[in-house]
Image 1 (cartoon, rainbow over the protein chains, first blue to last red):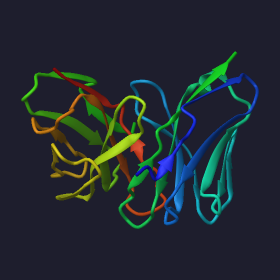
Image 2 (image 1 turned 180 degrees about the vertical axis):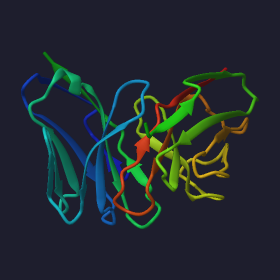
Image 3 (image 1 turned 135 degrees about the horizontal axis):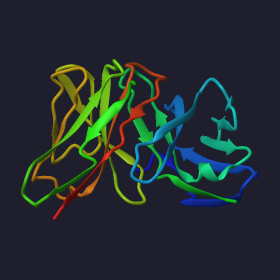
Image 4 (image 1 turned 120 degrees about the horizontal axis):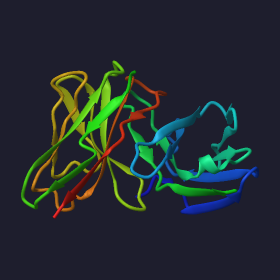
Amino acid sequence: DQQVKQNSPSLSVQEGRISILNCDYTNSMFDYFLWYKKYPAEGPTFLISISSIKDKNEDGRFTVFLNKSAKHLSLHIVPSQPGDSAVYFCAASAGGNTGKLIFGQGTTLQVKP
Amino acid sequence: DGGITQSPKYLFRKEGQNVTLSCEQNLNHDAMYWYRQDPGQGLRLIYYSQIVNDFQKGDIAEGYSVSREKKESFPLTVTSAQKNPTAFYLCASSKTGPFYEQYFGPGTRLTVT
């Protein structure tokens, strides 16, 4: 049972435009959400996070939006750059002290020059 | 420079052999995690540890074993009982508690033939 889903395996955008990556979840107990960026054969790098008490968090070109009623979050990258081309994973935590994360399948973003 | 190291980067083993993957961190994190990534899939949790000498099974612990004798180290043994051991293995660490991101090592690509 996939509790965190990224339904788009891939996304292609033009340099300078907005990239929107989507993520859906099923468990209403999730209270902390994260986005990671991953290059091939490397470990994921933390990008940005949001707790369930917020609906938006911004860090430079990256903004994460959370819609709890729809159990949906999205990552916006503006403007997109060729160096943003990577696999993006969303992850969710049910809180508590375990720190356990549930990851989506990932979306491959390609930013074309 | 603080971080997580995993060695080796690439590992080849014959079927039926146990193999141990190394993970060391100098971030002074209490919690450590092992994930597995297969092509087109997200990261799946194998084992995690929140404190020295204690660890818990994740979602896919069968065929794996771990130890946590030191805060800095969390080695993973892939045993011959693991049916599909060929994968990309990632180690991570974090502070203990909710709302902390996990930091990942560079990963080890294990190939078993």
